[in-house]
Image 1 (cartoon, chains in turn brown, yellow):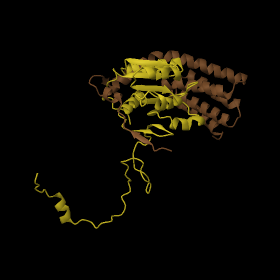
Image 2: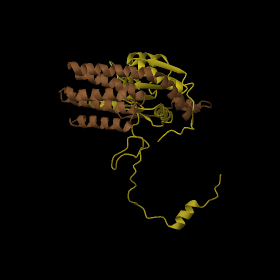
Image 3: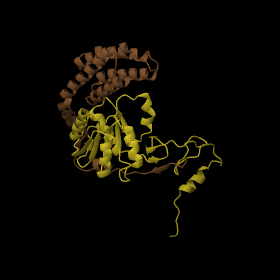
Image 4: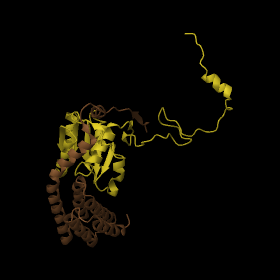
Length: 149
Length: 198
């Protein structure tokens, strides 16, 4: 095995961010938030569609755990960009649950169904009553943690 | 540690590559970077497209989603660090992750990305990571099993009794003194300015 080599790298980005002009970090974040807000409506609509697909999977119980995981992971991806923290936490619990079920090669649709119903609730209540919604997410983690990683 | 909101940042000449297989996520990322003042962005929906951009464009930053079909973000970074053209090999990468499945934990650790940002995040957090990347002074490690920024943020030196792998590695262990302590007059002698013949 050859020895590791250490290379000193100079990034162009380092010089660019320090160039005169630009804007304050506060303004940049604010502008980004505004730009992002223009996409939030469409994102919420498609999140609703994805939860709908999960609901169908739970009803039919024929989908593979990989498909459930992928759908959950996509919801997490989109919701995560819009900082939908509660929805992300619930979705993370679903992904973790399905990942554990995959490891144990055992699909348990009831617990997946509870997660999907909760996702629908959290999607509907987007941002309202954070304390209650957090308790819903805590409940989901209790279900997930029943399965050993 | 939050980014100081008064700090100035100039990204208007930076060329950024954004990679996500989900068109909606890609649009959201584009919107964020537009807000940050980045004028030139390349958007790719797959690792293969991103490879092409890397080979043909000069990039300053790559932001990539970890979970993608065919070639995921981790595989892309591994390719970038090992097989991309030399000029592009060490382009800084910010990896965006959702849920980390058991099977990809090691892959993530060994991918060679500069920073991993887990979702959910706000534009402020992403901007902070961009800033961190710009200020990242870690050396790049090129080894058989890993190519990427040194994963040790603080170099505390090799463990006691282990020979360092870097030329400048020093152990933090000082050890017991071998020579007698200097007395004050010796120290004064060391400090006293002396005339030298030039």
